[in-house]
Image 1 (cartoon, rainbow, N blue to C red):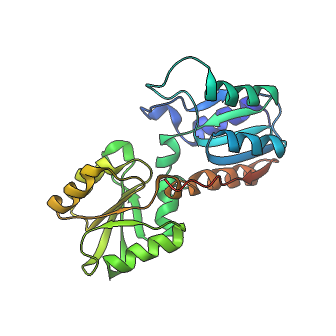
Image 2: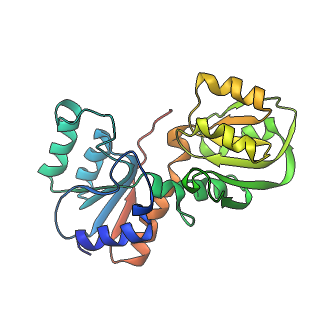
Length: 250
């Protein structure tokens, strides 16, 4: 397929124009016109770009791309090296942030719910652009057992705030840096809230709101949506896909 065909398809499939985001969604760096191989990864860091070059990718598709609000506009230093590598090797960079978090079929939240075996998973309508999801466990379990379950599935030790012996069943979650949605989660009446990152203030909020909180890692919670998207494209079109995981403990 062509670069423009891929851009148009992803814009429609992910409903990118519906989101108020912190970075541009879509084609961020233009490369070659024809796309036969896509490499996917969470963040367009230098290590991932180098791997895409080594794999002779035509396009790099990521969740965390470039040109975030508040960052310096100049193309120098680290940003210059990353962009230069893409341009030198004629590799397209596509980035999709909130549209990939929220996608109902293969977004980060949908995939995390499946990974953690959360039943009746669905986005909460009218709240945080549909980024907060909720569901339930088939049977109540102790918070300590559920914390171990998260750690085993994501291969990253989760931080739990709350009594590990207390039973939980109703869960809300939002992947990545969503710790400040804990107030919204508590308003839903759920037992627990999962996000990727945690802040100092989150500890006090969890205790005072009476809700269990699990910090499962920004990278760890957002590995699955981009993989699912790449696999979807490979099924739908005559292109090759390879996911590359650049380890990140945060």
